[in-house]
Length: 111
Length: 114
Image 1 (tube, chains in turn yellow, green):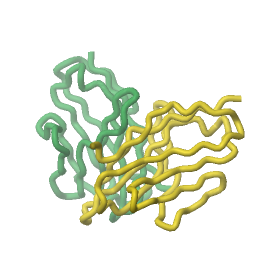
Image 2: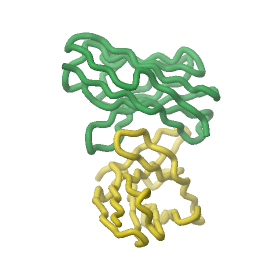
Image 3: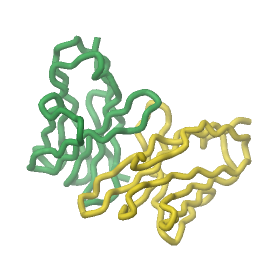
């Protein structure tokens, strides 16, 4: 089983739709979780951190389920500009703070 | 947010030559820098982690003699691809962090080996 797994998609949704992605991780001792956004041929940019209590930033909501070992990202009222690849990042435990990236989920928002 | 630069942004070289890529943190001191490689439609693959003043830690399967990493100061790390071959053609991205905080990514370097 891969350390971090994501459905590569693509998720093809109309503007205004709500879409959700999941990311599963295999190491139960993983400590920190993030969602990054990567546009084609660009570097990843931090979208949001993922906290145990869940967190929301405008149209974006991230949640962590430690029992089932997955994190999720919910995007409401999708915009054309949300089209990108969304990467989940899980940090290994033990103080080394080494990140592992999922392969990303591609989102295409169409008019 | 913090700014990380990479140079060059793209490079074309002949097989057998070496290429050096620089990664700089412009407005903060990066205690740790990470080097990634990304092939088309693939995820970022961590190649190595480097802490200032110490040897880089390479991920399994990454040849340390082929990918030389130097992190001589808190603002500069370099990756040298030695004796490059066409299969080394990829998008190389660095990131920098301060004491385990979030990573800030450079814009990447697209390497093409002919």
